[in-house]
Length: 390
Ligand SMILES: Nc1ncnc2c1ncn2[C@@H]1O[C@H](COP(=O)(O)OP(=O)(O)OP(=O)(O)O)[C@@H](O)[C@H]1O
Ligand SMILES: [Mg+2]
Image (cartoon, rainbow, N blue to C red; front, top):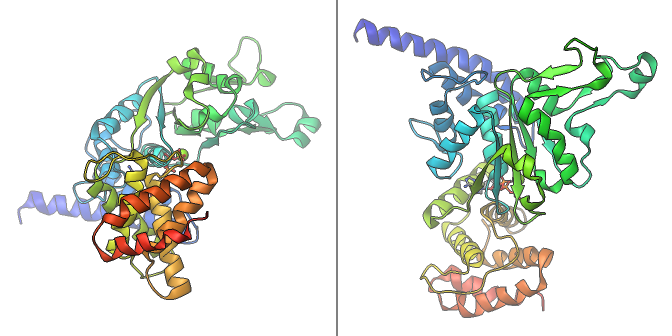
């Protein structure tokens, strides 16, 4: 080994050792959680990426864009965590390094939230500075609130102020997530306007004329990632002024069958491993499940034949949770790894949530398409059609 490579190896070993020591408590913490946030789940991988990162790092970021891409899209020894077009990821990163905020829009279950979580974990080291949008979201939840006991006792003060995730993100120079932003009333969404254009948040109660008291300025690294589901109240209800402050990116369902099948398989294996189970779903059952979900989602068969689409959500996220549920059912109730017949019941349950008409479409799909397919699992799926409610 030459001196240069020895030195490089020593540096890497040192980096690995320090990454491993800082990641160990995170691993212990994450083991005690049902769903650890990405920064804990992937603490060791993120620490290693930071130690080895040689690319230019935007102000306030933990990693270079190249390292964030490797973390999310995989490659060079890293596992792919999200299936998406490389160009989407690149555009999202450039937006986040600019002075515009990012809005991820798309069908339900297309991994918009997952993408925003992975981006904020990699870029800012935390994905939990999150505002969850709903019809009940108030301006206080977006900006700041007060500890009323202290407020009454002492009057408005820094101590009595309860910062929102947005205010913390501004102060600490981190990414803030705003989930389902279009579920908030537009006048509440507009609380973001001055934050996004002037990059500051005023607390008039603490202001002192002629000084900057009561003003929180954005530190480098602050930006906002919002998500919006097009099945909820649309982005049309967002004010034009706010829309201008966002770069919109549409997140599409996974286009390729093999990629979706592989993703469902790895995600289910991961969930089962977290449950402490060594059971693996049958590849044939997963194939039936992913095919059925794709065909009912798009209305187009694998053979290219046109059919009916469901209005119920049959997303990849739903496919993962159905595959997980049927494997648990098989394991705990029957001692098998899930059957094709279980998919029929899961579909019926999903359709019942949204639209009774969908049940008829599922029945026609099973009769007309699934019944014609060769293979034991397709036949079992077809034979279970009596499980659909009348
Ligand atoms: N392209 C994808 N890459 C990786 N995982 C995906 C992808 N599409 C769906 N998934 C699966 O879906 C889950 C994430 O769904 P997520 O909640 O992020 O979707 P969403 O678009 O935010 O949905 P909603 O609009 O309902 O909030 C992942 O944990 C993964 O199992
Ligand atoms: Mg979401």
